[in-house]
Amino acid sequence: MASDDQWLVVGLGNPGPDYAGNRHNVGQMVLAEMAHRLSAGFKNHRTHSSVAEGRLVPGGPRFVLAKPATYMNVSGGPVQSLLRLYDLDVSRLIVVHDELDIDFDTIKLKHGGGHGGHNGLRDIIAATGSNEFTRVRVGIGRPPGRQPAADFVLKDFSATERQNLPILLADAADAIEMIAADGLTAAQLKFHTASS
Image 1: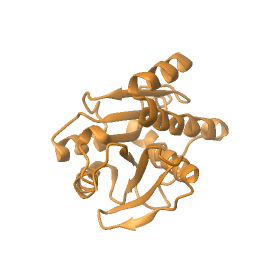
Image 2: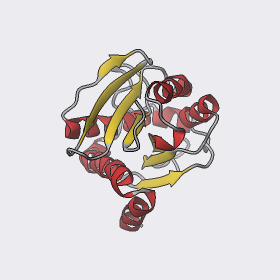
Image 3: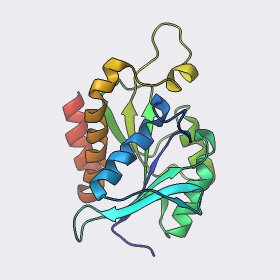
Image 4: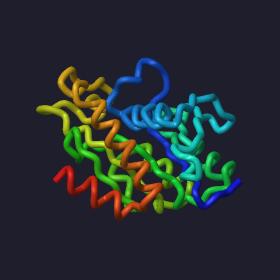
């Protein structure tokens, strides 16, 4: 059932325990924080996703949280299926993903734009035929030295990073809440000012 106050929030990552702590899976880590706030558990869904649903406050925005059960580079199919099933326009989609070009411990928010080489975003844009969705970009920073980016994103966060990771995940969840309640511009003013 379509609703003006309903949002589909997709956390990108790779499936299975071997990838769970990887930098590339930070989008799914943020969704775990959101589900905790909603007191909602993820259930396997016919859209090849794990889905949790709920509202943070009575009468507030309704969140459909989804973690595609596919690998990152084929995230688009599940996202398109979810949009169709919940009868939502792509403008009601928030994608949470890792971002190499942003320092660790930093959140950036944007609507539209290209995929910037991110294979998950590339596939979502291809599958939905649109780039007109909101992105919560969770900074993971650049790999040290000459380490290839593909190797870096598939490694777990360092011990030092893990100390600050709960704050980063909470900030990203706060940003999702604010986008849904107050709009993207208000959220950008808060989070971009805080991180600059």
